[in-house]
Length: 457
Image 1: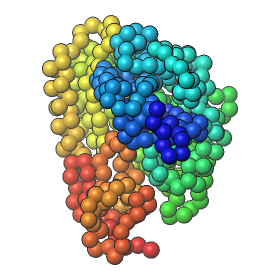
Image 2: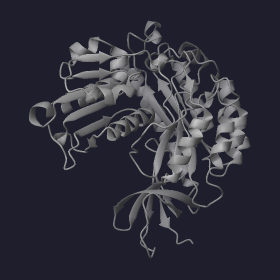
Image 3: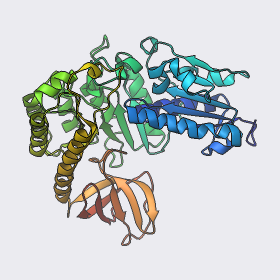
Image 4: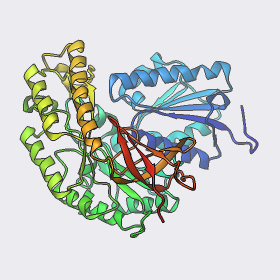
C-alpha cells in the first residue's frame, strides 16, 4: 500500500453532481484527513478511491457508473486496493447495485457519509452496502472537519432533504424529509469560512427558501440572511452571500426584502419553476400556476430593481401538449430570465411520473429543448448587452493567460452561469485570485462578458 513521505495512506476522491454533493465530499475529505489520510489529485497514486455519486436523473446515474468503471481500472494497473462508492447511486439502487458493480468494495448511502472514516480504518473489507435511513441521520454537525475545493468559494448547506412531493423527483427518497440546521450552527460555520478567507458563501439546500419551517424556533431564511450579512461588517471586500435552489411555493416577501436590504447579499434569485403550464405543473405536483409565477417575479423586480432571475425548466414531461409548450415559450419570452437552464424529462420506473399517461417521444422532447434554449440565447444576449459601458465588481477566479483573467459578478453563479473575461493589459499589477476587482464591460456575448480591469484604491 502506497504511503507518502509522512507515512499517510493516499486517497483519491471524485465528487459528482450538484453543489450539495460537493459539500458532502469536502466533509468526507476533512474527516479522512483528520484520521491520517493524505489526499491526492492523481488516482494512479491512490491506495483507496472514493466516488461520491449522483443519480438525480438517468444521465447522471449513467455518468456515475462510467466514472466508477474507469476508476476501477486502477485496481489492476495502479496501487488502488479498495474502491468505495458513496451517495445517491447506492441509495437509489440499493442492494441491486452490488451485483451490477462487482468492482466496488463498499457502498455507502446518503445516510452513511459519517461512516467513511470508520469504514476505511478497517484492515479487512468485503463487498458490502451500508444504507441507513436518511431520515434518521442528523444534519451535518457544526464542527465537521472540511477540506474546501476552492479557497475563495464555499457552499454552505443550511438544510438536508426535501418534504415536497414533486412527481418527477427522487430526492426525498434519497435524502429524506427536510431537516434544517440550527441557525447558530450555520452562523458559526460561516464565521469560520469567512475567517479562512472565503469571499463568496453560497447557501444551498434542496428547498433553500423553506429553511426553518421544520424547526421549533422562529428561524427562517430572511432572518438568517440578515444575521449572516453583518458578520464581516461594511468593508468593501466583505464576503458575498448567494442563495441557490429556491422554490416558488416557499419563497417569502420577507426574504426578498432581506436581499434588498443587504448590500453584500447578491440580488440573485434562483427559482426553478420547472414549467409554466398549469396543467403540466399540476401533473408535476407543483402547487402554483402561471399567474402565481407572474406575480412572484413582478414582486421581486419591484422590490429589488437590480434583481437577477434564474430558473430551471423541464421539457417533454408526460402529457405536455403543443399548447402547453407554447405557453411555456410565451412565459419565458415575457419574463426574460437572465439565466435559464433546461432539461429533457428523465423517466424511471421508481418515479411517480412514470405512471402518468401520454409520455412524450424523445425526439419531440429534444426538439422542444432546443427551441427553448434557442429563445433563451437571444434573451441572454440582449440582457448581457445592457452591461456594456458599465463598471461591475468581479470575484477573480482564474488566470487564463498573459493579461487575461476569468471571474464572476454577483449576477453570475458558479458553474451554472456565464463568466467575465478580464483584460489587465492597462493595469500596472496582476490581479489576485480569490480577490475582488472592478471591470468596465466592453463587450457582451450570449452568456459571458468581456472588459478591462480598472485601477482602484
